[in-house]
Amino acid sequence: MAETESPPSPAAPPETTVYIFYAPFLEFGFTPTIVLQHFTLHTMMQFYGALGAVAGTAFLFQLLAAFKERLYSRYLRVQRMRTAADIENGDDDESCDGCSCMLFIFLTGLHIVQTICGFLLILVAASFNGWMIGAMIGGSALGYLLGMWRCCCDHIHTEFKVP
Image 1 (cartoon, rainbow, N blue to C red):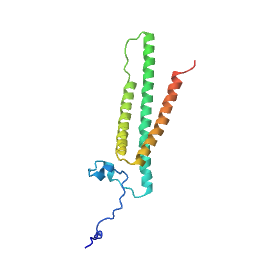
Image 2: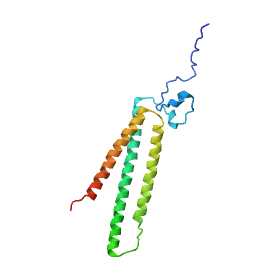
Image 3: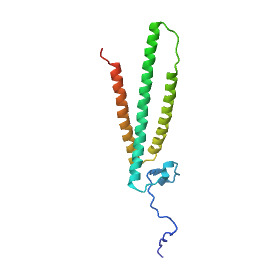
Image 4: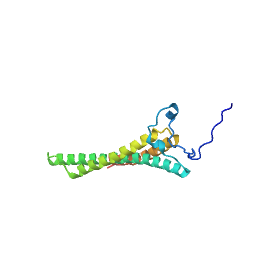
């Protein structure tokens, strides 16, 4: 007797769920551990929105890195100038002003935000989805080029001034 398939139950929802984050390890019997595995897409606009969100997060990650580096280099430059002025004046006292303390608090806050963005990007990279990884690389590259280009221009203008 030929085996026949039973018709699907009318109470069961149709299986039309498309996973954005495809994980190949599911085919080999491993249990899913990625939280983003359960997000579904229903329209192309949601797909484009997800790509934009990933690219924007990567862009923000790189811009924060450049901004932190720029702030810290300016802080060190001010400290060098203050130390040189103190040596010329004969002051041996090290002054601890509130500006440097607030700067380090601000840099710590930027670092926390950048770390959260980094963990989100790690989740995207663990999804093994080519579109999402491409958006992450594109956003990171754009953020790096725009942010570091500005830092490099500031460095060139301050270090190589013609008298």
